[in-house]
Length: 228
Image 1 (cartoon, rainbow, N blue to C red):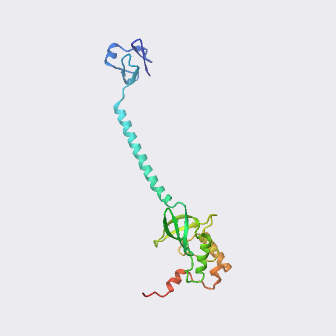
Image 2: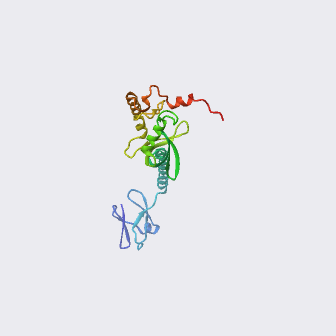
Image 3: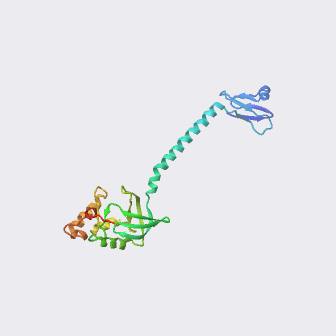
C-alpha cells in the first residue's frame, strides 16, 4: 500500500480515490486496512507515510529489551563456563630448576611456579634411585621449553600439571617406564600409567630391580621426626 502525489492531488493507491481537501488539510486519512496515515503536503518531497502505532511500538521495544537481556545473561553464563577451561589450557613454559624427579620450577608469563608431576611419585633424593630420577628428568627437560597441561592445585595445595615433551610424550610416563617413579595411590594416575608400571615391575627396570622397593609416601612416614 502506498500513496503518490500527482498535480497537487493525493491518490490512495489500491483504492483509486483522491484524498479530499478536508483530509489533506487535516493531514490525516486511512489506508484500506484501516491504518491511520499522515498525508504530507505537496512540495514536501515525500508522498505519505504510516503513522507509528505507539502501543505496538512500545511492545516491540519492550520485547527487544527483554531479548537483549536474555542474550546478555546467556553470554555471561557462557563466559563463566569457558573461563575454567581457559585457565587450564595448554601453555609453553621453560624449566628453570629440576629439584627432584617429580618436582620442578617453571617460568611462564613473567612468573615462576613450582610444579609437581601429576599422578606420579618419584623416590626422595635420599632414597635409592632418587638421584637417578632427578637426573633423568633433568636430561629430558632441564632449561628447555615444555608444554604445561591442566595446571591446578591438588588437595594438598600443591600445583600439579602434566608436563609434555616437544614430541608429545609425557615426562611422567617416561619416568614410570624407566622404573623411576610410582603411580600415586588413590586413583591419581590413569590406567595407561598403571599398565606402564606393571611392565616396568615385570621387567625389573630401575627401582623394581630391588626386591622390596619402598614407595616415598611410606619412606617418609617411617623416618624418625627431626628435633630442632
